[in-house]
Image 1: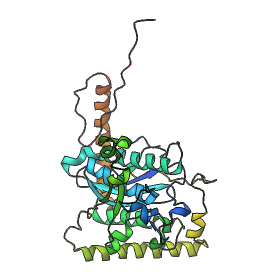
Image 2: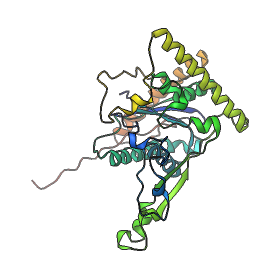
Image 3: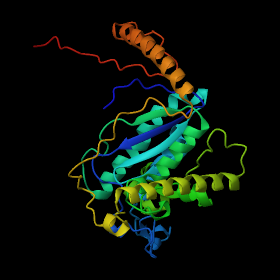
Length: 338
């Protein structure tokens, strides 16, 4: 895993990826969202407040509800969110006041997904294989390219032919057609505060609540109308789908398809795992902008190294470069009794 210094600048869009150990984001067959009696992975009657049945969330709902909670605890601009067979893509940006919210947001989001997934699949293993990767998009074209890359990823990986066919979590239909992103969870803190199982006048279902995931437009899209943004996303996705189809034809490859995807055991790991390759320093449509960012990055790296040496030597008031995170201090306690 890349040990790169984590730095966040205000008003830059960051493309992030979290890779998991297993194929956990694939729906199990009983969580097929196309089933007429299922809604986000549970029977419709289970979502009725008067029903005694406690609903079981799907992986779709787990990801969405975890993102909503993480945004409530650590507000920032979430621009896209899309899942794949074994990883999640998201795009975020922050204001100057929100720079410190990036790490807590990913901590709470990934923790919510991991704990919920382990409960759902009745497992106790680590869900994510390491820390998330994050690179800045230096301009609007590169941010748009990363948005399209995230949404079209299942097509690029030859899992489905069109983004609209993907069984994985995706904000595509929200971007392209305005479909609401609504997810549910249970306020367990409220349930236990009201007496938990000792209180016979309520059940966990009493505390079921619907939450809406709010996505922010890309910087540079604020002046566009909702219709213009939807048209732009559809065009970006269409162009990326056509490019992926042309690549498949030239390589003589075929699409796996949704039925075959549903046959995969979520506990399995690929026999020949693919290498994600080296992490890019940044994304930019202008080579000059990329070179300028690399120069600034080298200067920041040297400044951070000096600050880190002082900090670990005991100078805990040492200032670090803006947008970076201080290294942890490990305290060692010894006992006087042997």
